[in-house]
Length: 310
Length: 273
Image 1 (tube, rainbow over the protein chains, first blue to last red):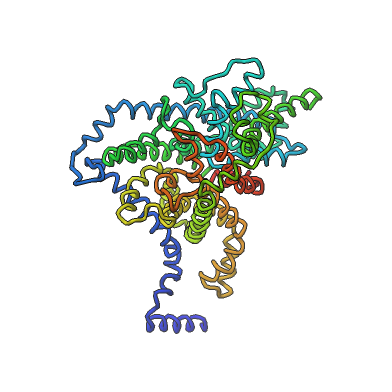
Image 2 (image 1 turned 135 degrees about the horizontal axis):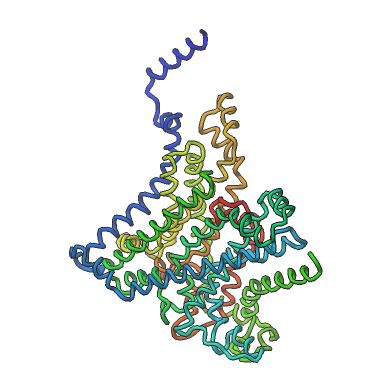
């Protein structure tokens, strides 16, 4: 009885006095939204604005000077017939497939090797993870020098071993050389994600399989691989997300030359070298839609793989 | 494991470590080489040479290395501070109330999927009109943009780990929502905040696309300076290696000390390595 009366008094008090803005913002009902205000402001400025801007200019012809001319869907028609753009798109997908599959294979192999704890593990792990946090641009400059034809370390070592020097930056090889640099930097990532996965697998299932006389290959294919699939999914999704927008390794090496132009590079070249904002925006919108589509599908798969945990 | 298995294990492990460490060590070797030793065709000189400080001297004397280095420090530290404030608030809201039922969280994370050039075009035009091109403030704003989504998602995982009962108990004790956040949740999530902040610092430190497009001279970060040594006319491998040796040092140290968290950070908290 007493508490009820007390709360009525309180309620009456609250009605009588107009709550301050601070009280409203931190009230039980609105607090969760108050916390989000700064984030929403950032999203509105940095996501909505560029999106609307690019969408608007993708229907215009504008070179940063003078008036923008409305041209309808002409930019989009041009894009679908633009050989350079389609080639860049094809190359991007090629890099994506090569890098993701190589990283997964190397990662899986090494993860199986390192799946059990071993002496000196901390040192191995510490050294192996180093490339992940080093600026990709600096690593690409480094590899650009290492793969140099005359003075590059790789060719000098090949020569010392009695082999022929290789022209790593030829139009036939350059794209693969760039793939190599990316794989070199990122294979520790998939390796240690999978190591974490292997170590968290339930031991009794494998014990049972061993007792039943299952061959190691059978165990790997029927037990290990299916149980690792959520993690493999995570690796594929995240690497796809990052690889679609590969830019730094190109700047440090070929700068889009010798048939290595990728998606982000051609957008950069159109908008910032030729200052063709209209057409550049069209390309940007296209690559955005592509990324979102690919990632939305993968995000769904990722969520399912995680068992709806988040 | 038999003896043969052990030999195989250590041979492969040693090979992998060599492949990873040798190129990094190469930066430091090159940094101390004279031009003659850099442009050599003798394999022996890859390792055996007379060390010199020439490259560092040239880097400090002829190029604005420390000015650019300072730009990098100012931009990465200031953007990280702002990002941490914005994202810790938002991540707490997402973790505790599932605000926006996942859609908002997905929208947030999808900004990380945005191709950088999509934001670059409108902001380049806008910055040109506002006079923000080639200013540290302008570049820091862009770094805030691309780090916020990452930090929010990573922190979301750390906030999720705090049991809700703890907060309910505090509410019974008469704590307000603001007090709970400040006095109970934040101290508990401190390790997560530290990890996230270091990641943001590293991403901002390493960022290249925006830095390269939005700065020229005054606000130029050090990565852009180093990239300029690889020019179309002349390639200055000496100063490039010397600069790289200094610039990657903090990130190498971070990688070594954060090794427990790197996998967690890179998977946005999904895998606890």
